[in-house]
Length: 76
Image (cartoon, rainbow, N blue to C red; front, side):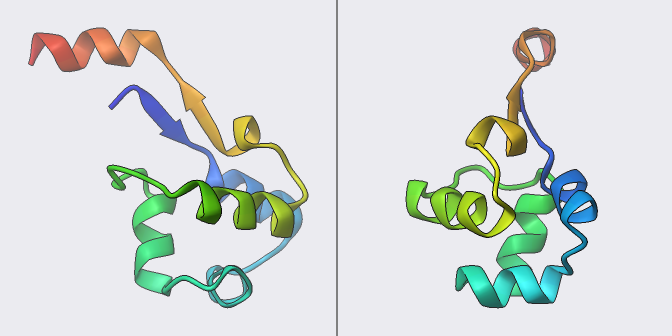
């Protein structure tokens, strides 16, 4: 996947636990964990907005596009 998720980095910088973030954003720990590990296939804008609000950041702080990974996906 060409999208890299930096949620773990943001959580460390903001000193917030998975449980606390999940509760404050209103999603399950399991779903937040899937997003955090980069295994999610999609994210709702409402969820992304809630994460940004709680973490006081921009979507680009959480998500990154890497075109080199896109090329790797095409070659598989």
